Amino acid sequence: MRLLAMLSWLFFAVAAPAQAASSPQLQPLELQLSSLLAGRSGDVGLAAIDLRSGQTVSVNGDKAYPMASTVKVAVAAAYLAQVDYGRRSIDDLIGGRSAHSLMQAMLIRSDNQATDILIRDLGGPSAVQAWIDFHRLPGVRIDRTIAQLLAAKRDLYDPRDSATPEAMVTLLRELDQGRLLRPASKNYLLSTMRRCTTGSNRMKAFLPFGTPVEHKTGTLDGLTTDVGFITLPDGRRLAVAFFARGGVDRPRSIAEAALTIYEGFKRSVFNRFQSMTPTIQTAVPAYGQ
Image 1 (cartoon, one colour):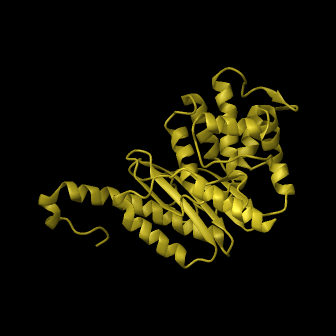
Image 2 (cartoon, one colour):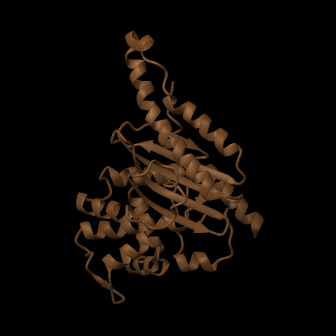
Image 3 (cartoon, helix red, strand yellow):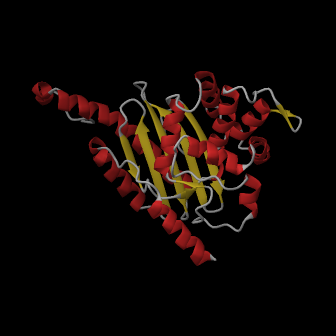
């Protein structure tokens, strides 16, 4: 069974549509991230995109990893899309609880039971996957409820309930740019993600104090994930996804990679400014000197 699962995962990774590689301006950042992760045990995949310029960077970005609880972003968005079209309300009672309270529990505390209540109300995992497919977001698979996933034998190479880092940041970009949700629903989702209480030792750990972050974490035995948005000092926002499988000290790997991405995208603006103003380059010291 393990061999079959591995072969299935390899087929999924090869068959998945190609995603954008790192932008030319960010090749140095990609090399820096690759060097950082080469010294770590385990398998780390990441992707980031500047939501203003569209510049991207990725390492193992087209590899499939289990989403774990980061899938809850898609579940929330699928429900809020129903709210946008008047088919559901955030005030609806589901199993004696409001959709609002279920959403808060799912995104802030990563409540698995609340997640499965919402998934069942939407029509099951296949209904959430249908929403993903309708919006042409390849590379994201939603096959099981959280209870089913946790009850199954753990296999971190199972293609079910997986996403590539690049597919995840594409989903986040589409959410941010209003192509999946109306403004009120998008703002509701982001404000709730901003209050996430899990994973303080992951992407937020080494960022400068007060850096705005909206995110959702995920954890399984042998797997640590974190996805969401980081705002830079100049107001630019990044969609980011980190997946760490196997090895040790996975949260630290994510934290160090997140800081490297933060600093790298800050430098990208300075370097772009230099390239557009060659007449004053000699008068401007290199960044960091």
